[in-house]
Picture 1 (cartoon, protein in one colour):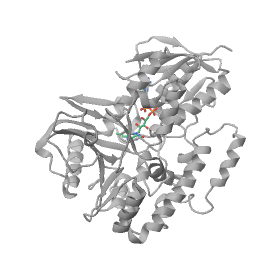
Picture 2 (cartoon, rainbow, N blue to C red):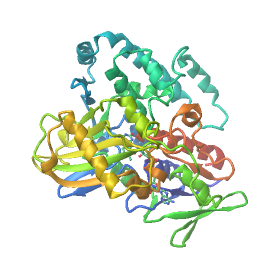
Picture 3 (spheres, rainbow, N blue to C red):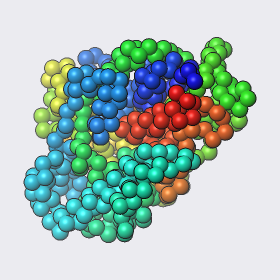
Picture 4 (tube, protein in one colour):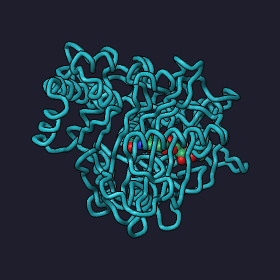
Length: 490
Ligand SMILES: Cc1cc2nc3c(=O)[nH]c(=O)nc-3n(C[C@H](O)[C@H](O)[C@H](O)COP(=O)(O)OP(=O)(O)OC[C@H]3O[C@@H](n4cnc5c(N)ncnc54)[C@H](O)[C@@H]3O)c2cc1C
């Protein structure tokens, strides 16, 4: 059968990777993006000589990115300057102590000895558990999708199945290995990498700290959006038609399969295969099955401040984290357990990304670009008062944690609330990862990549299987590529 005509709806990283993979295999591919630029959440904002990545700031599993380039006959190392960051991050705890999380094992060992002498063994045992969970996930969960016949080679992965631990609650499992509340918060924060609470997520997410520990934290020189630019060039090389400002309002079916999509301006485009890269909660509306987004438990969103600073912050590392006084209270407030509804916490843990520490192309000479982020519940309802309150609380936390006073040095500023994220990418509540990963069902039964009922329709990206985060959406694209080959005969 000749390769079918493919319409990819949404040019987030998952949509871009799927478009490229299918074009490499000879499909005629059109990539439709409602925004003015491709990249989705992996995007860029520039003003007065400052450059900011507006979404991801840290890359893990660079081999997954390299594989996509080599599949298209390119070498990632020729196209991009990929840098391993050391230290990964510097952590500042509420009591004023700090932990420099480096990539050299002897230095890390000395740092653990200094700060957490009674928990050194527990730290390494937790990472070992994370390693088993990662290997198990890599060979099963990351390699295939729910509802498909299991690949017999996956049976070999069972040897990575942890006999004990790994199946319980994330926070409880961490506590059974280490005692120091600061180290418990350090591990707890990794659950938020997929928009979840450490108090509700399953221990399987311990694969995430292991991933960073063993595979490193990476950065693309020029900012992470350079990855999107390099992929854009490959899409053009393989003849992918890219249409920005093209918002798909309906997926049209005929005889139980996809036939076309219609755009908001009324234009119709025919296609044999449709890959949906938007938020899975929106799909029933596009299929005409519902008037409102599907009800799911949304993952967290974020409150982001992009700040161009006048002057250098010489002691500030590329990544740093400033913990709140009470991490569990913060999540109680995020989840609405203590304040009658989910809300921005009174004392947020704040993540600061200052890429200008490693890359002088991102800010004018002697200046810095800061991306500052705090967790926030998914919520479409943000007003100026709420925004200014969150800004004040973030700056207050930084000040209390000894961060240099930057208030009079801000030259450019852009604030991203969950409502901004929601409207920029059409993601209900601005939930960065679609549904949350609380409990087994939500973690392991994310919307399947192949639509169960509509022939020729596939989902790719962070709100579908296997979940969010840049390497994971590339794995999602690899799964969709295999499914198209299996089911569409090309
Ligand atoms: C603030 C922030 C920080 C993050 N930090 C990190 C990090 O450090 N490391 C990491 O790995 N990940 C991080 N992530 C997550 C990461 O960005 C995402 O998981 C990943 O980029 C999502 O890719 P995706 O394929 O799901 O597409 P998305 O980025 O969700 O893009 C989907 C695209 O589809 C378009 N679209 C939707 N509906 C339609 C329609 N009907 N018609 C046409 N187009 C449509 C949207 O406009 C959008 O461009 C972060 C995200 C955010 C927002």
